[in-house]
Amino acid sequence: MKNIAVIGSGTMGNGIAHVFAQSGYQVKLIDISQNALDKALATVTKNLDRQIKKELITENDKQSTLSNISTSTSIETDVKEMDLVVEAATENVDLKLKIFRDLDKFCKEGAILATNTSSISITKIAAETNRPDKIIGMHFMNPVPIMKLVEVIRGYATSDETTNLIMELSEKLGKVPVEVNDYPGFIANRILMPMINEAIYSLYEGVAGVYEIDTVMKLGMAHPMGPLQLADFIGLDVCLSILNVLHDGFGNPKYAPCPLLVNMVQAGYKGVKSGEGFYKHTPGSKELVVSTRFQK
Image (cartoon, rainbow, N blue to C red):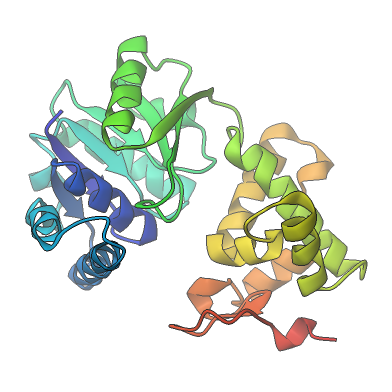
């Protein structure tokens, strides 16, 4: 595989494009918005500059990486010759299904179509195409250039050949791939989201405050980040979406999202992306300040 397309230029999409380009692949980053694409390239450039500052790469590495990325606003015209397409659009079922119907129509016969979904069924996505054996999950972790894990999810009809190719490719990107099967939440979010949800319930029920909950998990369980801070980082809307997938998929009330999480998302408090969730988030500031809504 030499030519890669990434659909969606948001946080995950630009990170995925970054790691492919840095590993020497020609990457076409596709989004419906040229403004979003310009912002994505600026983010990749900023992240490469950080790597230079940490002496992880050189200026030549940066320029080489950027030269490997081109942008487009058209799926139809720019995926025809791609060997692999990685979809990294918003975590919305209907949107992803439409994208995969389009990709199946416009991509060449042998192309592998991967999704970066964090919870949506690979089998369901594959059923929208005429190539279910070539549909696979490639769940990168955020921030993509730093985090080593890639959760490789096999749908019901995903072939061994496709799985092996994606496992090998992930290793070539310097990642550690872990193969899992297609059940709601896969492994990462099936374990993580109930923990985050329980932390929110603990806050909701007045067991402890934001700072106290996160401190217990950081100092007592050796987590690098507390569950409420992590929820803000992931996006509270994304957490809610994944919990709904788990709840619908398993039909078990233990996955029901906490009412506090539902209210926060409805009110627009989505974490880092909105500037406030359980904490206040000021661009450029590393200070962790609990939201005034949860201060004692």
